[in-house]
Image 1 (cartoon, rainbow, N blue to C red):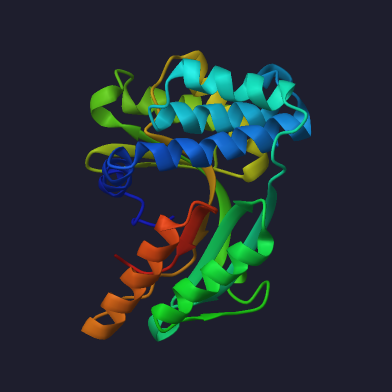
Image 2: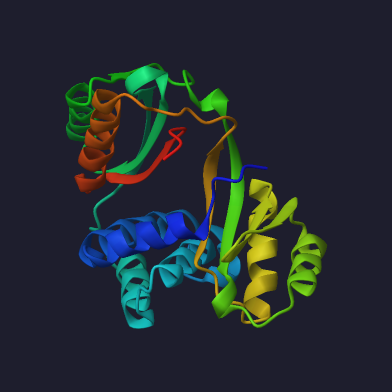
Length: 242
């Protein structure tokens, strides 16, 4: 269990997203479109869509915007078809970076991702070159201030629903699950109306790399900033200890 997944990091991400809500809503809209195409428009029968809806709500996406996205994806036969593209590579000092994209043009996306790595003195590698350094986990972050349930009761609720680990941090609770148990744990929390600051299946690094050289710090931030600006990029995972 890593001690790096703090609510402060989630707040930082959310504050960053709040400055560009259009981008995060566009990203989630793409995920909704893909989920509806793959499994239909009813979240009760489409666990992938239910998970995307939970992610949308954690990012303060309005319910009517979510509903419009689902209806559009279900009813628009000419909707753009997005495909998943994953890239792996290295940043400064051997830091490991995984980039997950949803794109309607893989050539454009590949060029943009490669450009981000190059400008930050990094390099794209082959599939699997760094993913072995990460574990795929369901991760749920709950802000203490937003949770009325006692910590022990919350822990038992999560563990009984299938969670692997429960950690209490200074200002948050973190719940980790196996990927296939994520939906059951999330649904158990939703049933108790527990607000989640973040809820998604993610890639958690097994170890972290500390950077101290100013050039390395500048370069990895350059890579991450360029990837963040790319509308095709959905998620970026890395093992830099920020």
